[in-house]
Every structure is written in C-alpha cells, then in structure tokens.
Image (cartoon, rainbow, N blue to C red):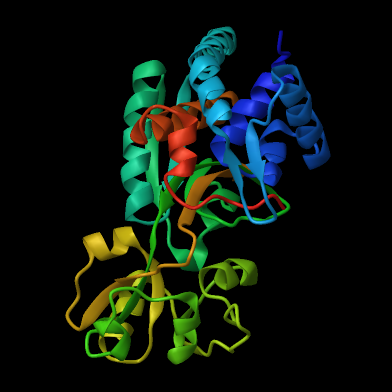
Length: 315
C-alpha cells in the first residue's frame, strides 16, 4: 500500500519531470523527493523513471502505473478541495493576471472551469506587460498571475507549470536566418538581440536570450523594448532579432517580420505565481482548477502534459 507522500511524489514528478519543481510543490527537499521515489520503485520492484544529468522521463512501467493510479488520485484531490471550499466558504472576488496571448487564452479557459465549480467567486482578469511583470501582484492589482517562467522572487510563490509554448526566433524578413527552416541557439550570436526594459529580472532575460551561446560566443544586446509590439516593430525595421513564443507567431504578422522555429531550445514555460503573503483559499482553489485544465488540454494525463515537449532538468 502506497502512502500519500509516495503517491503525490510519483504523480507530481510524472507531471513536472523535474525534481526541483516537484520538491517546491510538495514543500519538501529534493533529497526527500528522490528518497520517496526510490521507496516507491523498491515497492514496485523496477524503475519508474529514467534519470540522466539532463532529463527525467517515465519508463514504460511508470507510464502504466500513472495511468492506473492518477484518476483516483485526482478524484480524491478534487473531493478534498470541494470539501475544504465548503468548509471555508470560498466566495468573494479573485483577480487573475496573465502575460501574453497564450497565457490569456489559458486563463479564460481556467476561469470558465473555476466559476462552474465555485459560482460564489467573481473572477476578474488583468493583462500584464513584460516591463512590469510582477508589479500587479505586488501592487495588489492581481492576486494570482499566469506568467512566463522562470520566477525566482523571495516574496512570490511559484506554482506549477500549466503551459508550454515552443520557441521561435523573430527575424527581419530579408535576414539570412529567414531563409532557414530552423535556427539554433548559436544563431543568436549572428545579430543583436533585443533586451527588455522595465522591471525585468536579469535571470529572466538571460533565460529568454542568454548572454552567451552554448559554445561561448557572446550575444550582443540590441535596443531595449518595453512591449512586444515595439520589439516586433524594431525587428521589422531590420534592427535586430528576438526569441518569442509560437503564440506570438500565430497572433502577430507585422510587415517585414519572419518567424523561424528553434530546433534545440526548450519551450517557454508558463505557470502560476502569487504573493507569499497572499495565499488564500481562493488562490489555492484556482491553482487546482488550472492544473486540471492544463491536463485536460494535453490529453487528460499529467504525463502527456509534461512529455509533449522537452523535459526539464533535475537541478
């Protein structure tokens, strides 16, 4: 018989494929997660995950076990959430912010599911900009945010990943890179890459467009841009290039801009963020609904949500 922590560790690791993020969600150490998974594997009698220095992946046996136990686990968690909501009387209002079109679409779907489950909560939305990505949380304009990761702020809690978007490179239409079917991260060193202006953490900018390529070539920073529209206008004017999500290519087709997919860059991840001092029953309830919606979007299992794109690292 598996204990609760063993079941939660297995299911959440199968979703995240990342020991660090699993530990954050369970609020335990990475070592505890690793030890717990080893206990489960000893109980089963065979490995459930393939682990390397670069990725974590379910084994075929692990996929079978996930398919067997996840529906029951999710049903128990939903029932528990409903009972807690009833006991605490979840009602009132909730403002959810989002960054980018892909996140906006996801938020609207999550809100629809949330209001069906909790009709006593009035949900409002708030669009944010890269230049002030965390300000709505800190200023009290939003209680919850679906934004692009990474997020490493001492006053903010980073929740689960709910959306993964392939990366593309926005280049001038007459650029040499526009003639290629794909680009690689090394190609960032072939032109100036636009920086983001405003209250944007250095680590976030570095994740989107590293200052050096994997082979050590310097990536020159171009002019700073405050909004996506400004960035694309400068790309179309031939002033540089910029990594973007595939949702940008789907929604924006400005004159003079071409989009080329990366063949070696991990997808952009979007997840839930809230203030460490602002974790209310409404926030927890919305986060649970959002995770369910993310799973439904990708076929109904945590495995398919996490494995549909390149996996994370066991950091």
